[in-house]
Image 1 (cartoon, rainbow, N blue to C red):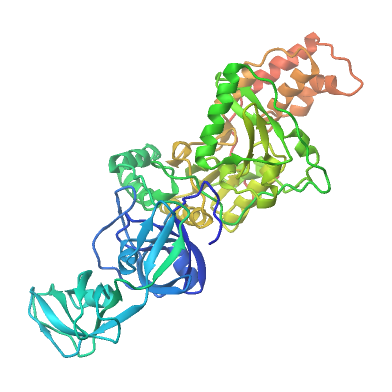
Image 2: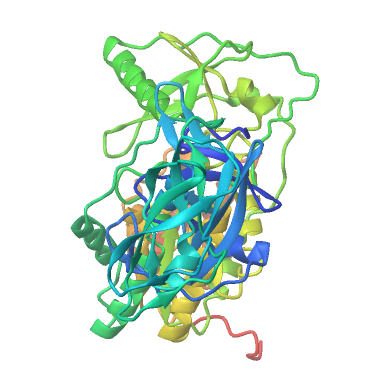
Length: 580
């Protein structure tokens, strides 16, 4: 059984699908077994048309299947041919649904976290050529291949029977002298002839051997109500689109609804990324927990309990230890942080580059429609490397714990995250989307292209096992905020909320305050012609040999920069073909 991160769905079982090893989700609420389009393509399976009933996703809304395919599922020493419905997007590459569970007479033991499957199949063949009268249930004399003479479970070959308009129920039949009566229903309006020797199903001895495999957890699911899902999806769609465009965009989001954190869905888990902490030959570093008040201790305990319940952290016996610190945010709420400064000092630095913000903004030239995607707790979707989990240990007044996923505060966390996102979206970046850490922007010149580009990005995210934050995703906008800027088809301007921070900045009283102000202004220096010359009276105060003396000239420069940014123009998009 392959190990899965502790916060991933625990009703998973390791299987071999033909020659592909995957973790399959066991779902008693799924009427069909499901395979993702991406895995089906990798396996190069032949897809046949699906003409079955309407399929509804976990949200309660209909999902359009791509077709059907068959594959052999091998679990330990047993093998089961299974039919799969191929869907464009799924929360897992393989979902073992009711058809597989019935065909294998599966028993899920929640107490022991085991999935038990029956084996030792016995084929059923028709001895003569019976004629089925229309819409009647009859019992046909059927000869069993050599096997035990006792009660058997009948497992029909549903794929072949359905093509002939026939149905054989799952049932238990008594075997006498290698003969049994199997009920078959003809659903057509005309008689049907079954050839001699036609296989209608297999039987399994009630007392046959069991194939047993371990589940990662007992099977349990929670599904959001249909209205809740529709409401969440609609809230993500802009009013900039017309009703026809809204419907098309809604259908697309609904098809990929498993990507979003709608309902009580578990956090996504990156399939091809882990975070490593290389500390060389450094000895384990340990710090005692900081002293906190009783109210702060309760806040820490509550946060720890929440992360434990989600599998984000676990109890630890690590020789490493960093202290917890509570940081008060601007809105007065408290943020739980771990002080990893000492650990970061001995960590070998990862210098993977972040995208240049000006390059990212320049890539939006010519776009009219924009959608912004945000990953749900992005860092926590990347598992920690097993050997480095102990280094994330943190101490509280009540114990020692360690992260199973990448925590905030580690020096190389941004590099790990950006590397993963660049890998996930490698062939799409700078062509149809831009990505800066967990912020993704999809852009296009027309609406049809926008839908196809969103679909391509969704496919990449689904294949990587990542999940989106529905509250921070916005689709189909003609005006969008990107990296502190407002972008439209006409050009780029500073985000008014960011400019408000400049306008309300108090007069600096020391070099620390001044450095913060200049850094804030420098972020938008492209909007101020001759920024370096204008700001020179202030930047000169930051020189090593300078003495901080605030003069009237400094004050005039301070106000001039504020006025310039609060009344800055909208810059046209960069045109690489224009004369410079």
